[in-house]
Image (cartoon, rainbow, N blue to C red):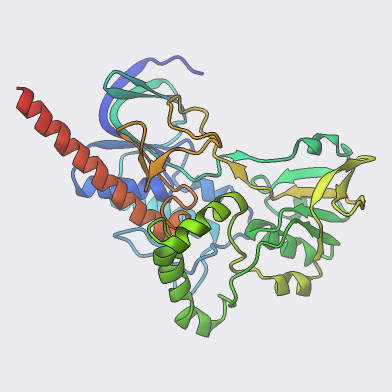
Length: 373
């Protein structure tokens, strides 16, 4: 950890300058609340730029804009990851949001009635801290990965960019969610024998790239089902939430038929290593040259030194408002309030709710201070 040399007082520190943090910033600015956004990357949008080359968003452009600035693309198109990155950078500039890039937060703790955020060579004292980051901060790879033959190229999906990174030969994709499915199709189309290991996560029962579906069905899926039905406020949403948090969501754009058409072979879960080769649940050892771990992430909030987490490492909150520490908030978490909470249009709604809570807290503190004086 670096030595802190400067201290600054600010009402609200927002940790993370992606779509969640910028959404929070937009609403704080509209309410004229003082704040700063701390972003670890050198540029706004870099978390998107660093993903694999061919990635396109899983949601159409009409759902990819943040409040105040529609996404600049045909509404039924699927933007590239670089278009999304550039949009976020333009958004921050358009609304003059105080984003400090290249500033990685190393610790959040509490001293008396305020929070202390340590980042690079600075110390921020704040009434409020908003952790505006997804639940996907620390990559998850099984321990037995270290037992694979060193000649096998291993990459986590976070590090995968394109097929040129791999050795010639077969590929095993471990993890059958959206990222695993899209990467598998890309690799299979290069002529490699490609396996996908993992349980069937299910799929949306419509082809979301079909023009008619985009016009008629997708609005129902994204605006109604994901955004209004599957929420913590409905019995259906409360029932679905634990499953989504632990198992993930269904395939959205790349579907089972796409995997089969590309020649991808579905295989059982990967459970260990034998002779340096990955072993499947049915006992087979696959002789592959490459393994890509699409096994997801963990929250990675060890830098938050506060008693706010449950036994699984998830923050205790109600719609992003921490229930054990006043002034702590979260935006961007998986199913924070709805299935859409990690989608851009869902993040924006959650951000507005959290900023409402911050503004109410500020009013309460002002009233108390006035009464004391």
